[in-house]
Image (tube, rainbow, N blue to C red; front, side, top):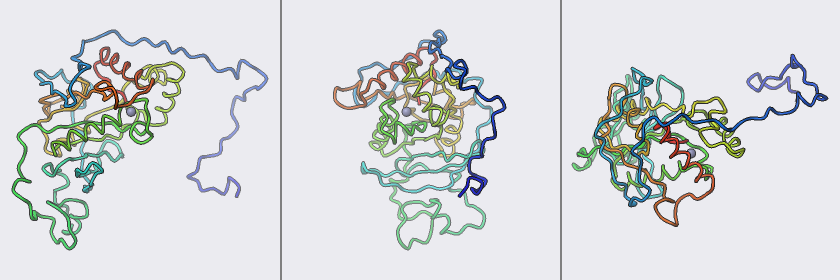
Amino acid sequence: MSSSEFPSFLSPRLGPRSEPESAEDPAVMRPTPISLDVQLPPTIISPSFTPVTVPSTPVPIPVISTPQPSESLPDILPEVECVVRARIPTTSGSEIFLHLYKNNMDDKEHLAIVFGNKIRSKSLDRVREGETEMDRMIRGAYVGRLYPGRQTSAEDNISPEENVVKDAATLVRIHSECYTGETAWSARCDCGEQLDEAARLMSKENHGVVVYLRQEGRGIGLGEKLKAYNLQDLGADTVTANLLLRHPADARSYSLATAILLDLGLTEIRLLTNNPDKIAAVEGKHREIKVRERVPMVPIAWRNHSGGIRSKEVEGYLKTKVRSLVNYQRLSLC
Ligand SMILES: [Zn+2]
């Protein structure tokens, strides 16, 4: 099969270059040296940073005054709709309800990982025109449990305590996708560990939500992130590597998370994060959500001498994270 027989969606064949390179000219072939010496901006505000030694159950930090919302936050939140929800029994024994969302901002499948059965999505429960009871059950808009032969999506054998709404603000983690840290066993960052820790704390309460945003590599995508890793191996730190690739140090946005939390009826939350600046971002420009407490996440390797991720890369990563928080108050890497 010649390349001309491949269907049109395959990569196009490239035409000749308009300025052909001369292999004989060493000046053309020599790579341009790059400088890894990018200066970070000076300290703006000193952060309230988590102490290194804390017990394994994190101590919540009350949020007395929320930082001013940034002017860059959007005025109007994106529209989100929960397309489908399904029960997932997990290897730890607890059950989660995975909620898959679509939105009017991008075409990615953002997720809400809901612990316990007290949190419901308004957009999922809304009755859609022409749908049958079976349609509703298939897309997860049922109350209680599914079982063979069930006929209705409405309330079914719910024990009274299952419907009790918790008084305490719900524990929430906003987590950005990290393929390398969560799936490819990377020791360059602690994202996998943080996701596990969030799940552990929420399983313990049998209540909570991880909003899982598909913004890989701090929003720059996996391909660019891998280039940044190569720059790190060349001596740049995580922030500098992004700047060298002409990406912002952090390209993530949290307005989708705010919209998803509102859809789940969560207006008062406890936020699991080390980044105080995330509070204003998640609360939204008009404070649609109120963060009552910030619950710190301390790397397991800093809490005891046996568990957690240990590598020279993750040490450098965490140092940069601390330095970046001091300098920018807005970075939680990956
Ligand atoms: Zn990561």
